[in-house]
Image (cartoon, rainbow, N blue to C red; front, top):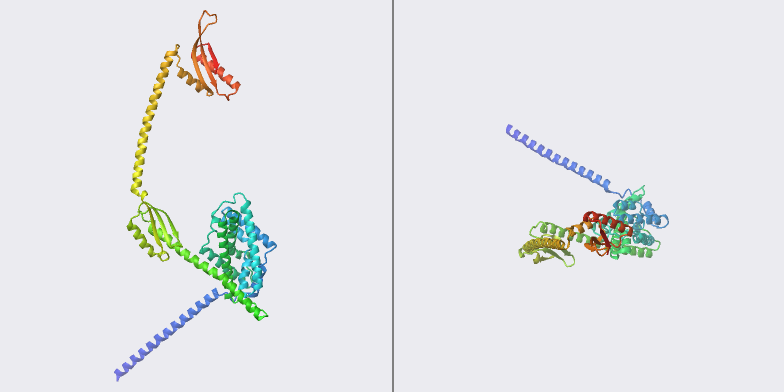
Length: 490
């Protein structure tokens, strides 16, 4: 009896434990659901901006910014000139300053708005004002880069706007999204600072296009391509945000007209978005190709000390990569590189062409270097031999001069020393001759005089020549120890 009572107590305890465990699980589950609900509520309040939207005020504000005339036109022209100066000076700070005063966003937001709410009249107005904005901007930039001194210099700021990539697309898209979200916020009007993101995508390309019109049409095409892409993506961002916010579609009294306009707006929206999406996909693919190519070169080629890379040339259309090397490239190396390229997803289908230069192998270059050193040594020996011969010739000439002087000079005067000293003292002296001459005044007694024949530089003034000549005569009387020195001019 007592044993049964004990067993019953154990069963009750086990049941209570199970109930407690189940109750604990339910409480944990409830707490987890409460935490998840709190997080969801927090994220919803943090990221949801639909309840804070003033649709009527937003539409009115965007439509008011579309007209492009009067003060707005002059502000744009001034900002374009400032941006052009900044691009020419290669100054990012000046370009940013121009963005702060640029009113470029109005017509582009109008395009996105009109397509989103099915407003064909606003679309026409936006397109006309956008075209006006482009023409004014191009004209202002063209005039600056055409006539300003040194404006033909291609700076890094200009070059960076000639070849668009996926980063430019992202700047335009997220800049446009940020601007339209700021525009739709209830109770506020986006200040001009919100336009900086759009100006970043639009002003520099327009100024660069003006430079291209003035100096290089290819640059104009590249810059306008970037401007067009950025414009499309800004309008696309505006369209998507307004659709997410469920802006009301414009109603028309005539149902057929409303349907026709809706179809036209949808067609324009598709027409605008299709090339934008295609361009985005193309940029993504191109960026992937370039990234894999750069990684292949950095990992497989550059660290290899046996390879002497001259240059690499990728051809994206033909799916081929040509590598030029200085020196011979072994077949094993070619096979290894061909296998390694298959590890790179984007370029694994590319054909690899290896161009080695057999005439520039390391051994041959070393041989050529050794030959050059030997040739230089031989030339040095030849030069030393020639210098010795020159010294010998100088010595022989000196000896001959001395022999001639000893035979013709009875007074023991060294003509070589005399003429050399005369030239050192009188740099304008071009000719010097000296001899002893016999003379007779009464034809009975014979005397000797020193005759010196001179020639001075013809450009020498007469007064200076006479002065030099008298100084030379005084010096000769002293050197020759003869008062009878007679000077003749040649």
